[in-house]
Image (cartoon, rainbow, N blue to C red):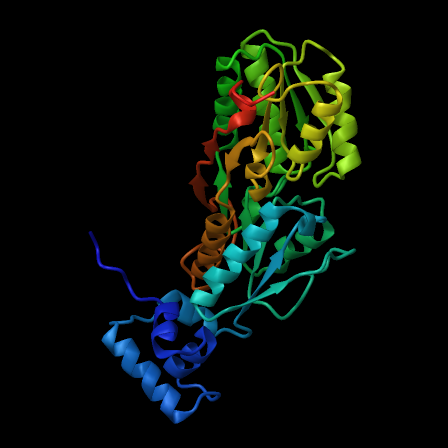
Length: 337
């Protein structure tokens, strides 16, 4: 097994200072005392710490900061919180700053004081995203940018087609004959891919799709109303809720409709969240590894800023991830009545 390669965070922890102070000391910048600088340099030698050249290149650029642009309503969705923390953790490893960007009402970039951008579940119809793509600074996307996938420097994407097929196969194997889905709008690559996978899976098996579109980050009443509508069909024996935050209200709607989740109705969410393990029954979902996903976006942006990734064009770098299906009580017909 390869030995662990010391990181800036390791040096900072061993020296008893913050990562920012360790970064300043290693770079010979003002802001730390001579004693702290000597201690950090000594620890770095002991740990055989090697400076990350792409990150050093970024830190010597104009700002040493990157901009993070999240979808509208992201603060209500656990997935985007975890994604953002993944970006911040990876940036901290390299002594970089992350600025959360506001949503712009024009085609101008949201902020000038960053060296590049990370966007997630974005669409080129968003004026802020359009501004970033036209600006010339590198843009790395979490999932493809709908309608502008080739304009980014790099993307980290999940295989949602394979994931959705796997989830539907799991429900069918548990005996589900009529599977309904609550889908997000098809304004993002992720939303379009999941909807397309459901339609293709249903067509290949001669099943009539039962799909209702709800908001990208829906409200509780919106989810409950949509779930109630599809569950009014007694033949529906499985329900997949795709937008983040939908499982709890869908479960509540099912109970009010007299359904037994894990009994006469199977339930699964597409995006896993901590609350799914606290619900009764616990809810099956995909672990999309949001923190790792965000961290990989940051690392690709650092490489782009250092010249290791083209600044957009016909051949963007793509890193593929595979979501992990976490099967729980709600989809196994084993939940208590």
